[in-house]
Length: 622
Image 1 (cartoon, rainbow, N blue to C red):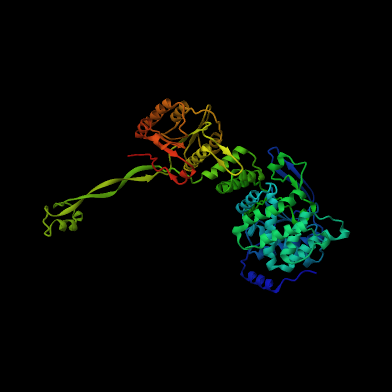
Image 2 (cartoon, rainbow, N blue to C red; image 1 turned 135 degrees about the vertical axis):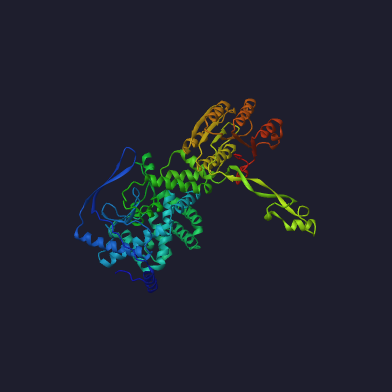
């Protein structure tokens, strides 16, 4: 018998229906029942799925109408969120009811393999419950891709293997949204879970139940006050894990700011269970990583009841509705992930971010490191350029106002201060004005040459929690200057020097510059004077040259000569000296260069970079 909704929930539901806005619903054409499905890969690595369809039977047509009605009923309950229309199918090769096509990011509702349900009203209730659950992922938890990334990172920081992190996050999200929906539909949610799991503990069904499934079912038992698992199949260690998980979920349930902390704690409860229950896929290959597939296989009963917990959700792409769900989304997805990772970079260590990127198929270590530095460097340094312009008039001093001067220039106050008797040409006064020189910020700044020292004294240290060293600080400064310049239409050249010279001529291609900057060498320190001069001569206009080093330059004499020459050519030179001694700037050599217009900054630590505004860098025009 189908459950009856509680009276309170019915009233709330009716009120919501009265307030909802009307929307015309476009139902996606149904292709038919899937008989066969094959995964094909093109030469460029892109996955294409070929399907063979047959027309629906009369019974399937009837179920289809019920499924549509239930889905749009759930959509109406949430006031028609901006989600694409689903694809309704009958795929008897899968027991998963609701899933996301990761190639098109379209929502698919599989109406096949319902668990022993035959009455129309029960079918509608069952599909309604499934639809509520899936829609809740995109309007509540995780809601958007940025939140999902933060939760994945929290699981990894909690000590969970990166491939386990999607399982932990999906379990957390399922418990959160099901508990929220249970408050409105307790009878429906209880009945749907009992129907879905009834065959697991039926001795005549000959089905086995994994420990992971039992842990999750026990969580729902505790949260909802029901019993599904027979007492004879309970285990104390497993039950304690379920109790701990439920306590974490229920504590400050409505506080979304605690989600990351909760995921981290739940990961610690699940990690040992996942190690025992989840098996490694022996057929897993490197190509599967690029296709965002997990190297682990979930137990069949977990897949049948709770769906694919290894799925990587990208709600942003789901919400971006497209009339053609089969259109390729690789470019849109890559841009979306890179933008979000740049935003998250200041919050994450490189190792955590690298794990997140590898989960989504990004395995190029240099590209991942460049993306992390790009995000770390955002906003650390702001380089502003100014040009002279005429400012407003400035009063200098009072002078005698004479007959014939403009009457509006006469100042009676100043005149009365001289004498109470106003005598033209004698006691009358006016102000002498002059025009000051103002400054105007240029919209397009100069091209920039980045000269980066990667010698052994510029150490670059990696550990599990952080990246440190002089070279790390140098990269933050270089990436900040590079980003600020490229955003304003400038061209960049880069020179990485130690014993060898790695260089990139003038370009506006971000990735080419990043690869040069990230090519650490670790040998001697010889400033590449010839290469710097070559690039300076090829510049269309006088440029800004940033030299980032630690002052341990072996060829200082020719370097000083080059700086003088570049300054004479009209180029601007600013040098960052990492851990440099401020007193060295008072020596004769540096004072001479500074008098000619060179700028030098000694930087002790990363805090000195944050908020540093190089407003002294000016392009002066009369």
